[in-house]
Length: 235
Image (tube, rainbow, N blue to C red; front, side):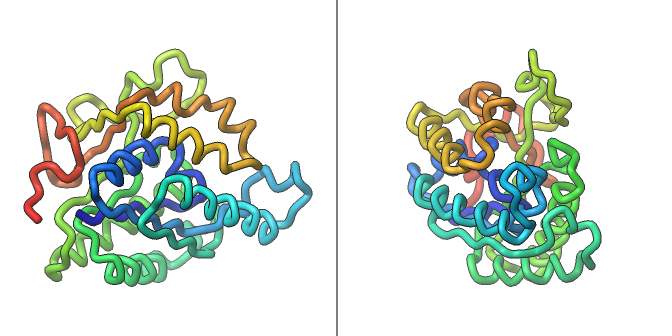
């Protein structure tokens, strides 16, 4: 099957979803990534005395290495305004997303859950626009069969100082268990973000997430949760 992940920033894919992405690639699925911005507005640019544009280019080059490490089927990075998606006409964002969906023809679309995990407004806008595009295109008989929303379980937040949003046990519809190969590839992907290593170390991403990746499924309910995003979908 063909799976398209859509996130607003570089590293969004590696802070959890990469574990599922590598597992899906190992199982013969096509996995594509669309990133809406180059992430240049990050405060980390001040550490390196770089402009937004310069930092965006640095992060884009880091993403090219991530693409190789994960072995993605394809990756496209747009240059929409980082930290500025809320100021854009959402129709304009939706148009570029729909164009890419038409090119990839995914069976499954993946983005953030409604809370965006961190609550950052770029995450929230991305969720809303991707959901709108999915609903619009699904009604027009595209190939899409499922919208999956990456999330964290409440158990992921045990003994952590970070205030991140989670989904309840009843809200989680898919829980993918990954193996050591997936964990190692995800770790190597995180290492590609050389300008973010102190943040990655502070968040302690892989150790906090463990070996399970969680998703809500839009307008679908499964209890117990599915073990794979492709489960229950007829090709």
